[in-house]
Image (cartoon, rainbow, N blue to C red; front, side, top):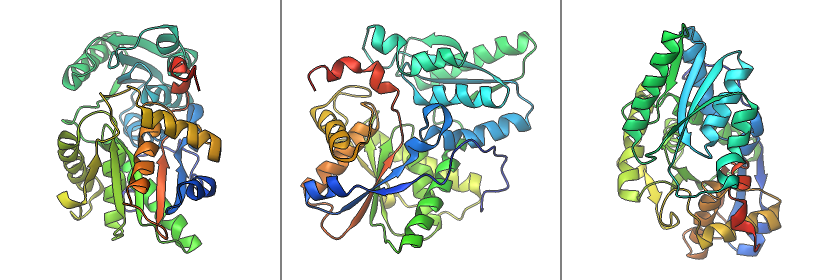
Length: 337
């Protein structure tokens, strides 16, 4: 592995499956659609953050930390998997839940990922301004100071762009894994469609495929901010990933493809296209998607097939990054489904 010089722990069930979506492919009458099942990484109901946490926890253990501190939205998959990883490795976890979405009610505030956070025994803090990344990270430092005062050894997982995207290396690994799976089957992948939020998954994956000199398109569907801001964030993360991994710089600004047509009014808000995508995934392929990330990503893929961007004969992969527990937090969206 080119990035074996960095500390890492094994948390994910990998390689995750690469499956054909034959029913959805037939229904859309377009390219051959596949799904990379990173919802099956195993840790506390799985998801893409498990791969990222392998590098954060590797560094945390190297530093002899005993408490991991992380921030995310109320229904964050990242904090849920971080809490599970901490428990698996004999550590404590303090999580900060940011109010990013103007949704109230017992489902959103107590079910889904929040329920799992509590079952995992994480200490929960709240942060009221979900649009202030720097402020949320600063609040993590205050929590870390209090842990240290009590005699603990904190390790903070920051999410704002000013910190090295160590977790993105997990998606360099995933890119290599997918390319190897395709080669074993004799498949040439033309494009991968994935969610682009923090940009760690997007940047890691893009850096990985370009390191391997594969020309496939990596299409990021925006789930938190518009394309103009997201594109620069992804490119900067790619540069940071290449430095962390000791790669030669191969990703160009032209390689960064982001679409905000399926974002709607913002992070965690419903769109008709997302609702359709969730229904189609369930009813054609038996796949469970979530409203925040994967529902919007598959909506983007479906839209690109319908507008002729992806055509018959091409092989297109949908990266399923998990998020299933959030379905229960957003239960009321599906009352009429």
